[in-house]
Length: 251
Image (cartoon, rainbow, N blue to C red; front, side):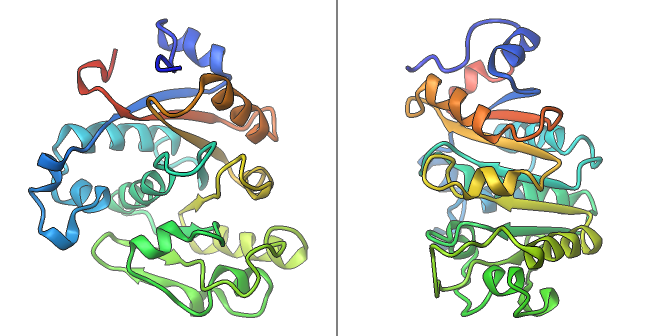
């Protein structure tokens, strides 16, 4: 279904989807990325190097909106399936939060694919798994991402990619430590329909953003993903559409 978002005003559309916020981000073309050095041609670098671009302005507004101007501390980001732009959005959200002088950490919770960790050029032997199990101190696992202003809690090379990362007392202490240490915690979750981890981890968040890709995500699947993530009736939900036509942004 190509027309993912119904043609209606924002309030009616939000009620239709069960989301508190709706947003759309324009695609970055090869001409846009060609403005960057060859080894830096990615959305995060474009966001920081061209903060006044349409892409940066729209994404900044959408991300800061879900953060509620800094009032929400933990935000979970995920997608119904892979290759929809959730990790890129999580990276951008962390950079946007850090640019507002908030102490920010990006937590790569996808042990199987580790997109955010690898995108930042990291491949550590230990990371979020060991911290969540109480086998490693949080400050020992954190990696400073100086160019973007935030810290990374990476997903390390998997010892047990199918282990239970998110339950038990150690995991609760780990999340409590993140709240105490950082002003903003961005959780980059695995896809909703790939594993139950996303729905479990979303319960710890103050808000959740579901990222879908234009001409890829079926509308019914997006709605089912939102329902699966809505673990608490009052948790704010946002739906962000990637690769939207620039001419329709803001319509």
